[in-house]
Amino acid sequence: MLGAIIGDMVGSMYEFHPCKTKKFNIYDYRMRTTDDSYLTMAVAKVLMDNYPINYTKESLKKIQKELAKEFVRTFRNNLNCGFGAKFYDWCLASLDMCEIQPPYNSYGNGSAMRISPVGWIAKTEKELKTLSKTVTEITHNHPEGIKGAEAIALCIFMALRGYTKDEIGERMIKEYYPEIAGFCFENLVKTYEFSEICQKSVPQAIYCFLISNSLEDAIRNCVAIGGDVDTIGAMAGSIAEAYYQSDSLCDFEDKFLYLIVDPEVEDFVKKFHQTIGTGKFK
Ligand SMILES: [Mg+2]
Image (cartoon, rainbow, N blue to C red; front, side, top):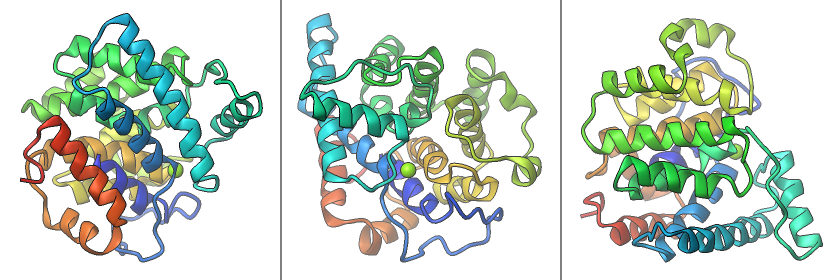
């Protein structure tokens, strides 16, 4: 989850001003947490409140009900943090009618930017797919929205279990996004353009992780290809954290926690890891 937050923060500098290079100041004081971080924390909060997760129909319905409310609460508290237009309208309508509105068939990448806690919490692939769908279909019930979230969550799940980048990449190419096999970093830097849909940003984020050698490197790859960088950064960062830093903090994360990440966010991230019992902050 910290990888998602850092990726979001770094990317927030470049979402509308692509720099198209890996050489930039990654500790820029102007960076901010945006919707990607806030909604990731909303998912984490409700899953922590319900931890250990019970996978019965009733329990999953309860999680959906609580999470829909938490999404709207997060919206009210952070109106100007960059929510997608459809999510914004869904929250407003839910507030206007004082009733959670039905999902809006979205395949926006909002489904995948907020999913990382699921990758850490699910204990089997079956649980992962069920929990990912439960969290996602509150808003993003289009098959591509469900698929994008599941792909990111599965990458995290596999990374935490010691699968190699080759194994994760092969699985993604075979079952989710065959186009990853044809990606070339230099080409993406030259030609990739802004897109907020899963189909055109989730595979790129996975690729930025696959060709990385550290969490920082994965995030630099995202900034270099450009596009919806805070969200691509959040997705690639969340996988890279699980792969490189699941039970330790690297110097890069340490620096963020020391001067850049808000103390409340740091406390929240620590609480998440304590609740689910990882070695990250030991
Ligand atoms: Mg954002």
